[in-house]
Image (cartoon, rainbow, N blue to C red; front, top):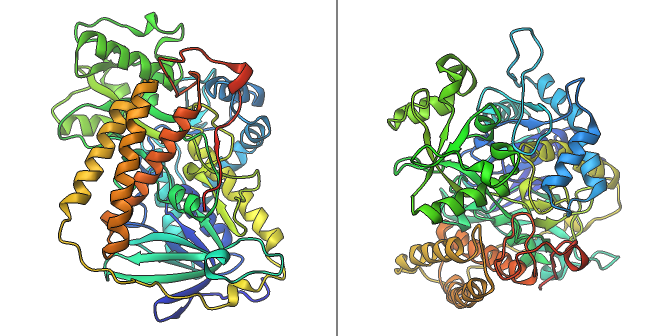
Length: 546
């Protein structure tokens, strides 16, 4: 890069870098390492570095690694789970590049579990026709994140800034700084330095969203507290289209315990022989799908939801006791330990579980090269909609997507890096607090947050209806008016910014769900119970809103 700034340059509350990466999960970390070979990288994370949805991923990474497996089988499984909405070119691209992504992680030092004979142990998860999920015990995401993070922290061209929350993207249209081609482009981002309560202008040639999903829109979720849909909300406000927001994946088996906050019981437990039963021991999945516990997640989650409503029980149970203590301790050490801490011995008794919001299958609409509607803005990972997941994500395809698209975005930027674009050199205006004041009614933020999460769970959850969606739309429109007024009159805080983003993402989910007049994949509407390939075998794309 001809004019590369090898370290981000600081000018008071303004920082200039070649690349601004927002988000510290697998996608953001891997891409930061790749881009650091091209110039200076500013990597901002909302909380401590390494906290992300990625770090909580237990199962593993799906890829064709076994001689008995084939690309076509993985592609077929992905399409089957995606219920007719997966993009053929994206699915093939990701699947065919999966093995190379795994080998890169191995070269970087990720320790995947091996069999006693030496090869990497591959597990099988719901929706997969073969064993193809490589893993690091039952904490794969943590192992990958820690390996990448250690290398990021040591790289001289990367400045890692934890505890910084992105507020809004800075665009040429908003600032009046136009490039010769007059296209709207991203110039950086305003970020809140949470610890020092100040706003920093982050200026960059290229900005990359790797902010993850939006599970905290719902009351029960496997996601960490940071999953508030920030990247989706910022991109939409900046003029990017979003797609398929109605498809929110509910993981079937989140640990049900008052002290177990967002703890997931991996898909691999069912893949290795765990069965789902009711409180009386009745194995119910055979009534819902021929593949029983190995059916795709949307089917398993709806089956559990149906049985809980039918029986009035608060949860169902996942039983893997038949596999024995040695097997359980070797394959699921972290899950076993967590359950023991809560008084549940999964060696001798079934685990109480409930479905919980887990993955945002839609997101910022991206092209196959990772670009968005906004010039010089990229998105990858859960924040994006690449067409890989369709109406329902196949288990363990998420980390795979992060790794494959990290390389794709790097290659795209390499091609664009010598363009004669000088708009990134123009100093950007500092953040303006306007005539705001400190608001004393902080309870309003927590009240609105709780109300959104409850009505989203009740009205826009696993099973929906036209009347429920209409109620949700009326509520979110009123709340957005209140939150908008609060935002423009009060000094910003992390809680206020996250509430603003959650409200917008909830609105996008509701609008998309109302738009789709059928049931497909993760979207189940009792007023439109059948899949309609004649009219709805297409993505739900919400228009640009400026």
